[in-house]
Image (cartoon, rainbow, N blue to C red; front, side, top):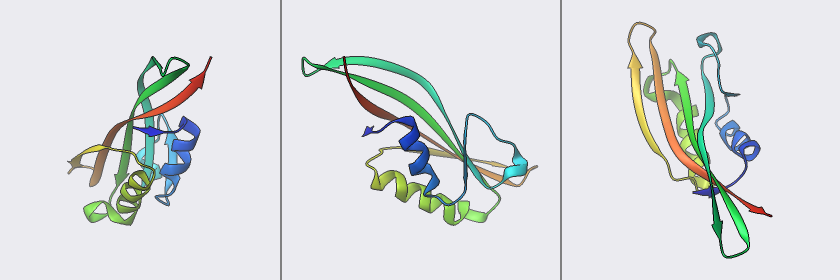
Length: 112
């Protein structure tokens, strides 16, 4: 899990060189990345700090074969920022859209 805020994650995703949306976008914006949080938990650690753990889904949509350069740049940006992720890909034949889904968690340390 990478230690970052959602705003920092937005910046990391932007390193792919295409538009990044939080929550939603439409196919008119191809190629694009969108991301959502699917849940957050709070854990007490080290006897002094809370950790906020947020589960995230990132969607990369393009019509470029093999996901295009932006897909590779996205993977490299996440790895460079120590984000461990899992991917799955769906091809929507009727729309000619390649949809790659990234799932992972980010952590933020919080003093209380």
